[in-house]
Length: 410
Image 1 (cartoon, rainbow, N blue to C red):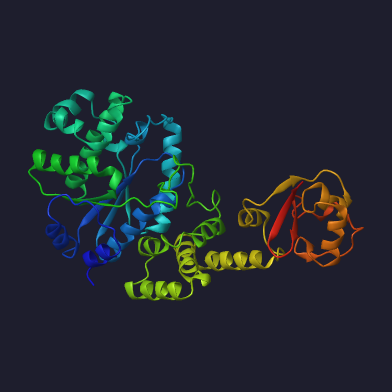
Image 2 (cartoon, rainbow, N blue to C red):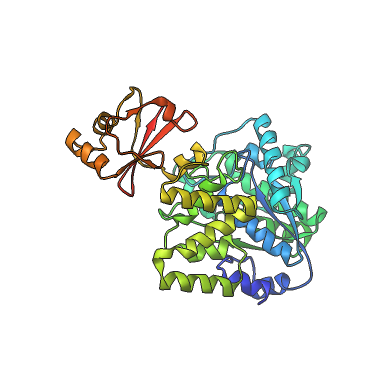
């Protein structure tokens, strides 16, 4: 299977600038330089960026040269969002964010060359920009872009309106200086991408190529991202490897095949085999387990992926020894919790915090070995529950029956 055929099978090619047949020849032809970009709105990339990173690695593995543009200039403005203008971030924050992203890219896409568009924008005057770039793009052209049309109803600043000129010229600059003949991005960047292709043709009489990937959505139909409030960071100090594993292992059955194609480097035959096993025995969740392990392995290494499996299995069995409080809280996210303030007999703790409806019912639970604390069965109704029992001095985990958990917060 050629690179183009593989990308098509994975559903990774949505919109193409020009003819798809021409794109196929370039992708499957001689090595070339390509670029993708991100604005440094945070000091870490997140799972929403991961599909682009995977794309970069796929092209790099095929022998092509990846260039990551981190938008020190464009990040100071922010590209238009569908609803409202982005918050302006300080120059200090932009530079700090670029540093964080740079380290991640070095680890995740080692062959990538990193560039910052502030380097070629900082000395360019407003007059130069209008004369050298603006004269090639008509107002009608800009107004016809989908994101601009949508924002006209609510209002858009001149800074945001001009964003596509900046990104378009970035492609021109990289075409000239880095021999980048292709840009790849999410489908929400289509207007900016085609502006770059058009500028290269008009300014340089050059031929550039571009395509977009479909946006990856969660089960609610939202894209992964900071602005959507569902960011899973690729920095493990901000989002633990287990948290990413836990999220993906709970992926919707209707989405897991697409996620396997987009987020893993498993071959077509491997993915089809895993999905066939999933359809034959959905209760095993083999597709979700494969997805979660592969992603965590790629992001943080095999040891972290294996550890995430171990944590998941221990939590499923109700075993908490050796687990961190953060992993436990992530694994038990959403279970009822209460502030544990007063040291009382077990029966009173159960009743006072809704784990039993009465003292009689609480005693029955205890007598039938249905109550465990921090993974250990307790059958002494007079046992005093103290703060000293808290894991890491932070939480006490109560379980009633096999699956009903409660967390006492210290």
